[in-house]
Image (cartoon, rainbow, N blue to C red; front, side, top):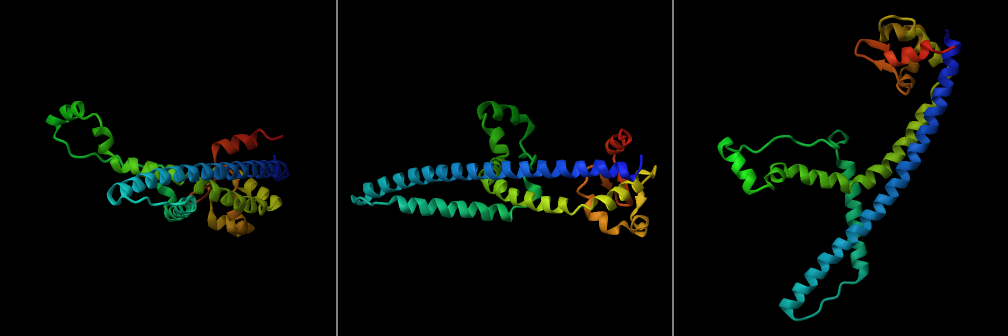
Length: 224
């Protein structure tokens, strides 16, 4: 096997990755729009229920009817949707789906009795996680929609992969039984390809240098 064989493989890999990313972008875009529309109507329904309760209480105490037009409900729902987008932009991406496992300090002698008398204690024990889970669900729409924009940027990065130079760089790493240091790699004239290689699955960036994963080596070994 030589760099020419890897070049053919890399071209196919690049084309496949672009197609898959386009598909993921379209799916994320459509899912985001549908989720946002559903969230908007759900918000509108909740606001309508809350306003109906408020108007009933107002009429009960002041004996006068107060009208709140649908335009106000739409504005309130719209403001809530904008706040969801802002909340998502403020969220740390690493916190998505991560929940605390800390528990309240309950006397072991009373713990079993408490759980029998109050089954909901398991929920209250991690009440913060429940609120975070609801927040994660609510920002799913903005996450999917804005995620499609990120996918489009990724397509641009994939298109920057230089097939000729990257295939030579991969062959150089492949020819080593151990990792290849960054200094040696850059000295060989492939420093500009470091960012491009990050878009190729199986190229591992270690602290000390570059290495191909076992899966990628097996795949390259099977090339003819």
